[in-house]
Length: 107
Image (tube, rainbow, N blue to C red; front, side, top):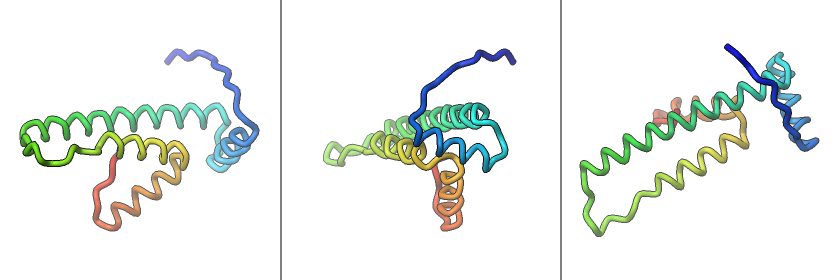
């Protein structure tokens, strides 16, 4: 796989947080950030597929005109924002807790 070097600026708080998380995983900061970006891309793609499937299912069911509109777009946005703030490790813990309770999680 070919790669390209990219430089980014981080606030000192972000650098400290990401460096600590990278050290806890035993990887370099650049590797950790690349893994986070790749994981986020994967999650966004999965959410887009799920949203498309739900949209198709909703289109087949054709709810009555009096039914309130679905807020799935808002839910996806909130989920993505929370996952970006929490990071992949905390997101995984939260997903496991949801599954432990017998609920379905957005993967």
